Image (tube, rainbow, N blue to C red; front, side, top):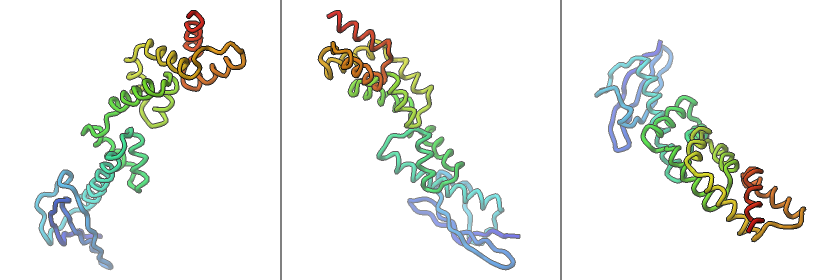
Length: 212
C-alpha cells in the first residue's frame, strides 16, 4: 500500500508547486508538480498532510494540463491552427491523448482557437489573393485539420459570382485571352481544374471570354 503525503507547498507567479512523498513499506519517492492556480483545487495543504490516491492522481493530471496549456499558448502565439492540428502538435510533446483533447477544448472554450474566424480569413486570402476555386480551398483547409462543416458553412456565405470573378481574373492575368490552339486550351483547362474550379465554371468563363 502506498501512502501519499505532502512534503512542501509553495506559491509563485508560475503557479503552485507541491512536493509529494509516495511511501511504501520498501521504498519512498518524491515527485514535484507545478499546477496553475486555475487548476488547483486542493485548498491550503500543509506539510505532513496525507492525501488520497485520488487526489495524488488528480494533481498529476492537473500538472500535465498546466504544462499542456502553457505549451499550447506557445504554439498559438506564432500560428493559428485548427483544433485537430493543435492536438497533433501537443502529442509531439508526449502529452496523453486525454490531456491533448482537454487542452484543445480549453483553447476553443476560451476563444484561443476560433475555427470559423480562421477559416473565413483563410478563404478570403485564397480567393482574393491566390484566386483559388472552391475545391482547392476545401482540400487545403481540410489538410490543415478544419472540419468540413465549418469550411462549407464559410464557403456558402460567398456569392458564386465572387468565384467566377476570381476565375476571370486569373485567366486574364495568366493568359490574357483564351488560347485558340486546342492543346494550349486544354493545358489552360487542366491548370484551372488544379486551382479548384469545376468544369462547368471553366466552360462558363471561356464562353464569356469568347463572347467579348
